[in-house]
Length: 326
Image (cartoon, one colour):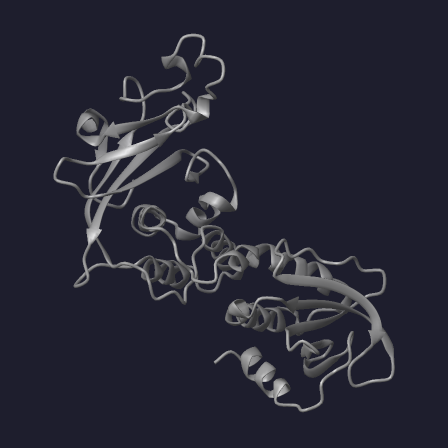
């Protein structure tokens, strides 16, 4: 169990209910306390320098505050950054976040702590939107294909993490933006009628002459016996970048932006039925801005022109059907 969960449980066993604006608090390291308020809300208190600005959580359920108040356990006044959780369904997520805050900020100078807290909140902010950790099946297989490509096709996973746009984490056209080329990943369910991918907008497969674009096509189907889940793929990525905290933080943040939660029990085991890499160039079957002279009619944004691409028509542009990418 998370240390934070255990400590909040201990604090709630205290019969003394704090007055409004006060906390039952437990010191976990110098300048950091776990606490519960009069409403039994799990809270984190962090001593920061005077004049610090209040952090932004970007989540209504995680309330930030900054107060000049008596430092818990002393009679001295200090400036405390306070995070209080309004929705108990997220308490396990908040506990995991709090454990990381304690680990990261334990040996940090007080003047650096507020900025470090904001950085961690930026990484974790997407976890506060999905208490069930439930991705739709389409979202799940989309993430599965991107993690599969990151693990098996790219020679350097850490560089791949840097170039992975992560979908919701940073809205861009490509799934991977690397120094030498871009990759668009498309994952679909295996169907008897063949593999069809949905292409979104006229820019998604619009390659430039000086920066190659590749399309990675993946097809999957449920496989409870020997399949893999997105959780297993994510854990393998973290194992490969073990010892690189910056890449691990970046990867976790991008996962979170997709609504992924590692403690979900709902992930589907998937088998990979097809994986192929195509070079998007020349007369590759696609629609781009040059396909419609003068552009789409007024009132139809170019990025709203969506269409289906049948992979059977792309054989002439096949680069590889087995990893890794050279």
